[in-house]
Length: 111
Image 1 (cartoon, rainbow, N blue to C red):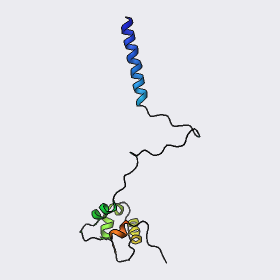
Image 2 (tube, helix red, strand yellow):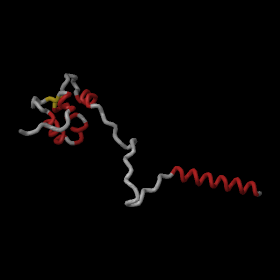
Image 3 (tube, rainbow, N blue to C red):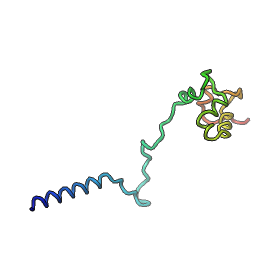
Image 4 (tube, one colour):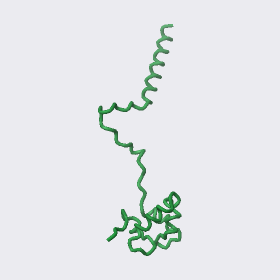
């Protein structure tokens, strides 16, 4: 009888420890520690601008028109905002984005 009780107690203890190991640690109280950095799994991977440009360039002519840009994710989300972004990126004002214009950060500056 003692051996059965000992085995059951060991199983209960093992189950409790295994369950506790699976739980997330409690958040530190305010001021206890610095906030944890976001986990790598939570961060979005950066997409290669050349790959995105190639997908947007529907006719494969090496440049993206406003219509092609608005057909992409930004245009589907908010067409007006997509047009604004397109116009800022179109540095030479020819109505098309080259890979260089598309990849450049920011928009054109007013002089």
